[in-house]
Image 1 (cartoon, one colour):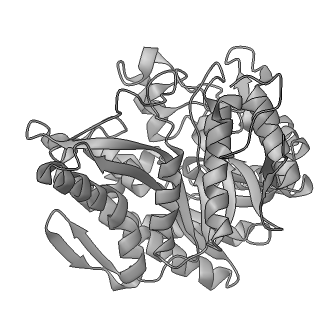
Image 2 (cartoon, helix red, strand yellow):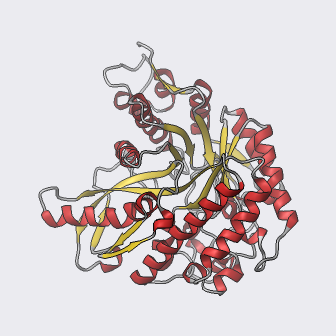
Image 3 (cartoon, helix red, strand yellow):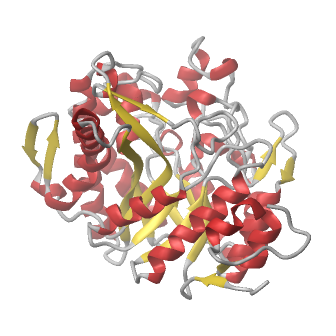
Length: 451
């Protein structure tokens, strides 16, 4: 076999991503804890409970594993409800707790990327209107100023808000996140308020820390017309993509909101990204469907021949990563892939998904696109929101009852990628031979390897 390697630039960031509520445990003062206590909200009645035990100190062993596997970065989030348990009241012990975690990451050689809002809200904030409240921008800026003021000596990379489009759609249209609304009008208001809150946070962070790099993590979902010859399918795929994918980053670029015919100027948001945080998981086909107003009159689905994850939640479409990167590149900013992953308890799909997507990232780097880093979701199995513990994204498996971690094969694959700063034929032949021909066209597997 002719050996080859897709090499990445020096100083490329290789990491994994986590979020506070999903790994810490006992976040009893936020809206998700209450949501979990209401019957029928979470798959199989699951609760986050102790999650991955990070607030009890198990972050140390998990970050040890990350560092030992060659990672040089980690993306984590701050839990607002711990920092500000009641309006204007600050928990110094919680701030010290995050300082310890971030210092621990740095000590292990992991560059921290810190997210300030990842889906959860303090109970007091939710009770006073949440992201629909008139005061929400001021509340968020107050919280951001306190956190950044305390941690700016340790953190340079800040993500203001994780997936504002997902948060707004799931909480205010689909009703799967708290507060469980089903209103298009409220969905727009929440996205608008998140854009304004991001802008206020961006300006506040740079006032406190001029050298900071600030962005948000945006979820891009690929959408292709189910029938490319159908004008209606082409129209609805483009329409849904503009509403879901384009609204927030466009506002943070040019200071204008455009949603379902509504246009609004938000000049304070223009130019409020120093980097583009891209979350990509999958691509779907979209068909026009008048019976589905809750999804903007479209029906998304995976084709029959799709390479699906075990629960059917994600289709392995690595070409969609290339499309997503090309889309993000149009904003003219450095790009961090802030999330990419697949849920796979048996680790049967994950190795080829990981290797195939890394190859697409390399293609972008090879074209001199400014891709600066890649964060796999996730380091260890964690609580997956309304899906509870039914979906396992981790490189390391978690036994929720015992808190025991067990390494999956894909953890070894990712470790080799990180340590080599590249993806080689030998790695793919060992860990994902079935994807070998796709990843290294024209090359042949060595004898003894099975595709």
